[in-house]
Length: 626
Image (cartoon, rainbow, N blue to C red; front, side, top):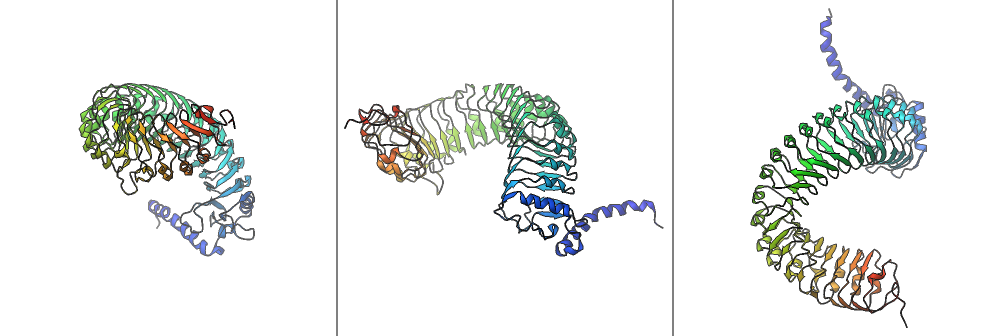
């Protein structure tokens, strides 16, 4: 006898095997299409109309879509339910299918007939790149649709209100198009199953609909890179399943709601580049799962709440470019997983809490805050820093020797009052790839040990009192493909001597883009070897004591966009090839001893670029007198 109490185990077993039965049927249908229903004529008509509206298909995605074939059997990207022959999925993204090209490209518009695929569950036409026009309102008829991916195309217009009728939607991604307009509040009312909403990188405007808080299943929300305005919905804390929220690069204003503290599952909070104001709510300390906090580039005021020390899973804090005040709380020392702390361009005051080195901090930027630090704190030597930025923080005194044994690769101490000689131990900082000690009071020569900085790529020493030769800088060793200068600025110092005529052949210089040597008593000629610098974009040799001609060889530097040679003793004529460099935007040879007619040129250079050369004539100066 069959007893009712035995039905539960049976039903559980049946539930487990049904998906496998479906997979077996689908597998068999792939090799024996006669066992399943053929493509439904309504679906075929809809798909053929979609193909008809595609004007360009260079990757042949639709080459198998032929009217006399079965769309369920041979059409690329079309998936049918074998039980009833209706299309349930349209997608060109299946990494397990060798038939699909890696680079998808379709140009055309979306067919309103897609709304007739009434059994469709997944519609993925993302990254087709050139699908344009409006999203058809008929998509609102797809009552079984769970996934709608149309991202990375050129769709425009607004989101049709009819999309709100698809209450089965679980994933909606319309990002990276040119969609615009406001989003009606009614759209989000029925999306009770939606877990994934991405509308980023469009042109949506107006307020964030308050109905968004009704989507209680939402785990991922990205509205970044739009023109949304107004306030963050006050009840955003109702979205308790959220683990990712991104509202960056909009025009959102007002306060961060206190209710945000209820998002206990939240791991990523990105609201940078908006107009948010007011204080950071203390409830932010309740986001115990948070890993990434990005509130930079807003107008936030007030202090950094002590409760931030409760974010025990945090790895990144970006609060730069606000108007935050007060002391940096010592509770940050609790954040043992924190690697990035960016607080620059605020109004924080000192002293700094030594507890900062209780963390696993690797990237610290406190620049442009009125800390009045005095000496660089010695306890920073206990941190495991890779990047240290203390520009314009009121530092004086000397460079601390503990830097010589650090692993720092990015050091910025610019715009302070640091004095003394550049120590020989600077050569021990062999991890350095970026060094900026500009606008301080250094007064020595560059020690020979500087050559050991084999990974250094960016060097800024401008506005100090360095003296002597540039040899140790130019002759720096490199490490295989690393250590080639990209940017070099030693302007406004007291460096002397001629510029090495072989500079363009030195390994450390060969891939430089910006070379700035202005306002030094450097003599001699401009080296012809500069023509060998294949990525050269910016040459600044103003206010030196250079003489001789402008080398015509520089005209072969096709990437040059800026040449500034004013206030020297240059003679001869202006080389035609140099003045007609295709990308040249800035050219200044004023106040030299140049002569002759200015060559005809396409660039729009002002008169001031040529003044102070009594022997020069021709456009834009007065005409030459022959």
